[in-house]
Image 1 (spheres, helix red, strand yellow):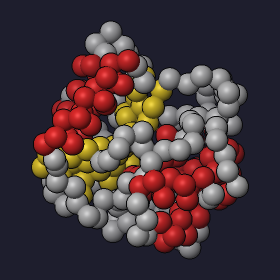
Image 2 (image 1 turned 120 degrees about the horizontal axis):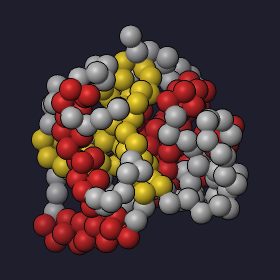
Image 3 (image 1 turned 30 degrees about the horizontal axis):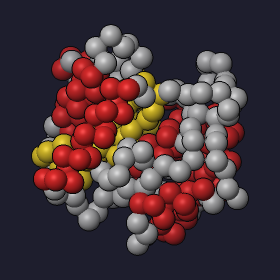
Image 4 (image 1 turned 120 degrees about the vertical axis):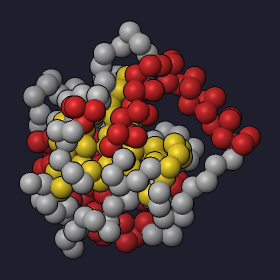
Length: 230
């Protein structure tokens, strides 16, 4: 099964949690809203935090930064852990699903997975490169069908698959002592420097702020986190 365009998944914790549980992720882990990026607001986010996801407008500033960032990294190089799970985005409007898969796939040491959709996908994706993983997702009926079902839920107007969407989801994870940005539209993971489990949320918030600074007049940013349930 190949799907070129999907209806986007809403940045709604209730919808995202239903999606994760449908894939086989333990309910011991939940998506929650991050209401602000200052230290006081971050202190309200339950710990531990496995991943942070940013939804932002895909503007000219983002495209220009992405292009220059790739040039700079190719020129200077960067350290990337062999343990990072990264996949390319081939399907339009699948960035929410890819962000959630990135969040879970890079935390399988913490997150219990049942013998279900995502465990099967991750088992099949072992040893594949980022492009092959993206192609595998296109053929994953379980994940695609779950996306289609949950994309119809939520509080806002549900667009059709051919309506233009200019928002994009990315994920931040901590792996082997470094903070990584995982964006299926980019050529590779981005290493944003050292971090620890204790500092991860704060360090990811700093990178989110840098995205916001690229579009200072834009307010349509949303941050959510994958955290241990109470």
